[in-house]
Image: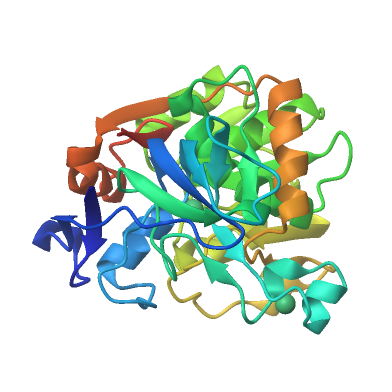
Length: 332
Ligand SMILES: [Zn+2]
Ligand SMILES: [Zn+2]
């Protein structure tokens, strides 16, 4: 089968991805062999390709927003069978026995493995995934629309939980790509006033179209104090601005797996008055199930920029240059 691999990480302009031929693999105990229909392009793939995220295996195939059809089920796979439409997400496995797993925080498991980082992901014609970590794809979404739900949607949802947005509160969102455009819709459906801060003019337009109260440039002042904020942009230099925009007792959650360095903070202007700064690390399967149900119930509108599998490197370059409206998705 055809598969992209990260051969030598580096700036996306140097072509870190390579399209190769390799065996499709076989499902082992408790695993599924899945024929990939679509795979979303996440900023984490870009971090991996560019080397911001250290590779965990040589020539790994990226991609962790996979919508596919089960081609074969290995022994011990009990949840899904041949022909089922399934979604493969970022969290690919945990030990299930450490103190984090036992207290319901499997997102913090030190022995967790991730799709498209530790094991091959969906920039390929087939992928093998653990039956226990695969999700049913909600009805009412096309294969392309469903793909961004699987990381952008799930992680954005966990970030929203971590931001502790009070009912009817104000939410600031920095960066407005695949994840933010889904998260904003959930917050708006919950009655929040959402203010978007991004340098990309097309993204500001999309934000207003989806019901955001305001959309401005990244460093513009907030129209009103924020009860909660989420940083989707991987830019640490925006953190002081976002903290300054928080109201007393407000929380800023950093959604990404990678962030450039945060400049020195001023305690009085950016943290005092019980403002909170927190990170978001992966997600639990519970987060995923909850979000996917919510996506279906709220009929989230998924904005997709389509690419063919052969164009994966182009999709990453466009993502790096802020040229993607909503979420980029590869059709296989
Ligand atoms: Zn992702
Ligand atoms: Zn664990």
